[in-house]
Length: 200
Image (cartoon, rainbow, N blue to C red; front, side):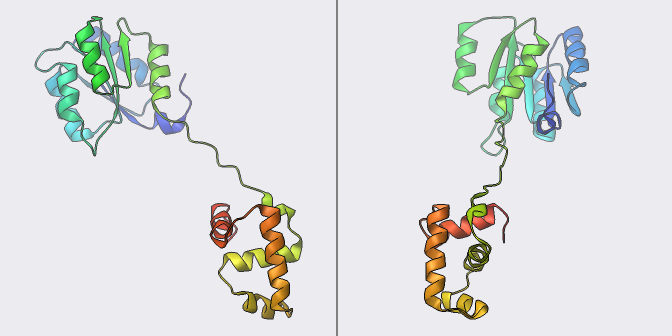
């Protein structure tokens, strides 16, 4: 089942010409998604696509007015590229090839298995890697850490040396130790690390 709030906050368009199937699927989707739009044919679906720009489109293929493939072709663009899941009672090879050509995210044969549908929706959204703070800076001594922060802020060796009343050559020694302990190859690596880990 869907528990990812980033996904459940997205909007869904369900395009289905059979009223019972449409209402049943809508009721279930409404348990998971905040906004669920419905349309009974491709023309209505295209109108909602153009006005609401839903994040996820679940559409039948064979429908009155405009079929699902044509509706998606007309609705998608470089700026608007929703997750698209095609549903159909017809395992027609031509339609399937058209769906593949259009890079459809999933293709389900009716009757729709809701659990499978939810699974396909979840798979269509890349899982963001959890950001774990890189704790390499913990290897540094107190003074090395202070010098590390000064370097990350762009201070020159002479400025740092004056700050701690030590020789610039000593700062160079600190810098070398910091680079060795933290596996930095350049000042840019050091600055990028400090910013990424919100240390400055």
